[in-house]
Length: 584
View (spheres, rainbow, N blue to C red):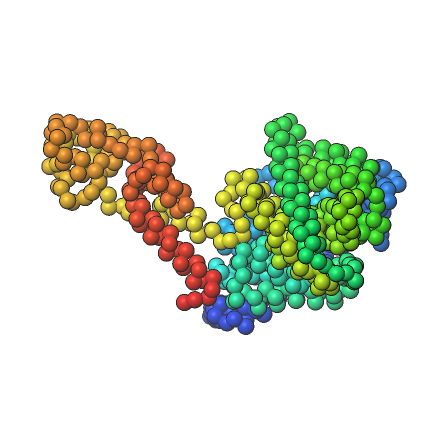
């Protein structure tokens, strides 16, 4: 009887899962639940990080980077101690065979599926890094936990691939929106940075999740992230051209920052003796920078508001810009975990303030509003590093409530995005995946490409003959017209090439000649794990219309034709597009 009750419960769960997959309204409710969870997790993580900074640095009301000075230098020992904690975590996790999967990688390669332990690892590492004052933002932890909780829900309900990616993007975007109290920016973050496309079917669940997360933030009494802007202004066509130049400058700074992080990371990895202790050494290197100015610590929210209010001298801004870039490079290249989204907002505000000061010094009779220049710089530099021009434009709108500034913000953001994509091609998150050997260039779904392998599409009815067979014996064994090609094998049945039947039947070829002398494509093969993109490239390089699939020891396991590979490639593209737009 107990077994019958268990079976009935399982049947009920299966029916509810099927109903959820088939009901758009149910999916929106699920996205709302994911958004509520993401909002709660975001505020919990922010509280934990701030609590750590209060313990280590005595920060209470103000943010860490807004401190005028570090009155007790011994407090900066928190940086190497935090590095030591990261070393201990790496030791505990040393048996893991792969790096944790982040939300962008999950949506691009793994259909949105993230093991929950990966969320905990990334979140814990980011909280420690930010909490001890390393120059990284918490957005990595926010987006990871928001998208991770959504992934767990999606896996439990066994959602379809497209719905799973939408739900993960909704959770990640909701978390980032909750951090700023900006639900629309969170929704655009989901579309542009995690999902990789706008679709009508995804609008309602993504917005529902973003609104749910924003509701949690307001219910907890957390003040939204607001920045004062100039209420009275008249923006002329000339102002747009000036801000285009600022957008270009921000793109150059963003590209330089990303390349510096990668260069430093590669140089540090070359020194094998210190690889285990990198975070500790990085913490020690950050200490003198923080002694010069605490604005190098943490993500820089407090320092940004302080500079906008105080408008310090140009020389000070230049020093802070250089030191903040150095702190970010050291933090990330020496093993602290976090993102550059929040830090790039601060760096962008510095570039904007510096740009306005330099313009005022030129005999051009142009006086930019320094607050406007800082806000435009924030958006333009963050777009270069993170991507998502609409995300940053909407974020500026929601944090300033200034519609008049929207035009120049969007203009500078689009220019910055275009230059970055033209000359660099990646956002920071996808660039780091690329450096690690991934083929991810954006959050668009390419996981199906990796699963469409030669082993899946090969045919196994090929004709094989020994390579030492004479032409006469080949003609006796393989009738003309029975097959266009034959696979040649050596004495150990290993692949040595392909021969065309027509060449073997050439009247000018002596009958006693070994067929192996006619072999082609001896060095051009596929492995069963070769994905579709690599297959098509191999066909182009070999100028072949058929390639053998060979295992690790040289045995032929199948044959793939170029025509079949290209047909399957375009079939999968069409299928993914139909799923994307909800077609049947």
